[in-house]
Image (cartoon, rainbow, N blue to C red):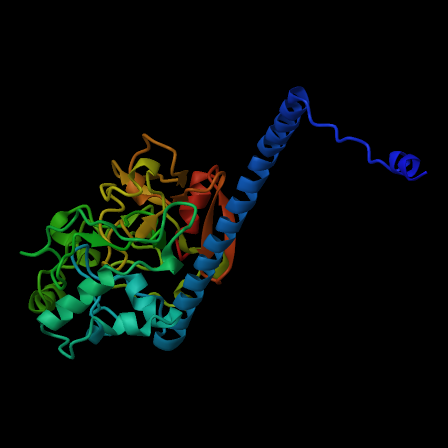
Length: 355
């Protein structure tokens, strides 16, 4: 009886997968991965774009906080061989660029204070060393995660003084920004090297100011183009633009946007508009324009994607590493998706603060 019971309750034998069934299962899984991968990549890029837009929002708020305290948007500084100097305030005497001037307004107080030596009219070793530490500090708030890692990159433009920058020890690597402020519809740096680099000392800066040697005061740059002033944007050399001067409307004028950098030059440091650092004064590393001066006329300077090549003046254009769009913060603090196929005249006028 016990034998019969055992036979009756005997478990059925296990049936193994055949090789064909295993291959079919693997094929199905492979197809599912192929189908899912684009969706995963799209979701990741959407997250990166969201982070990028949040960075622009933080920068716009910092610019507004700067305006609340000082009465104008961050000044553009002096030139491409000048870094920030904490002791020289936030106005026309400040050689550092717009990002340096907004450091206290996105809670980078300690970094901002590194450039202080208590000597606003002297270039000391302490100040130069502090400025170098700032130059060598990458900041996540000015980094687009779609484009490249937030790290140091080669500093190739270092011909300023005997050791590079006029008021900083020049390191071999520097932090970069993926964002630029709107300098207007004609220039985002001076085409004349003597003007572009600025004075070579604080003493010479006083002579420049007294003699009106600054680029914004020069005859060829003080001209009118189509009855519009050349420096028509929000931040440029020694600027102090207030909200009341944005007569076109705060919601109609660019404040800060993503800047074009050629995709094959992200890490080299050799792109003309990406060869210095984020804290220099007025130059094409940190400033962008919405038009180009060519043969006496202002012509197109539309934004382009980083994968676009063979366009004139790539170092002057807005753009991004994103597919189909670039992000921009407007003077009212809003951040919007912008397309690359925007009408060139509309884009030009969105860089002009006045009617």
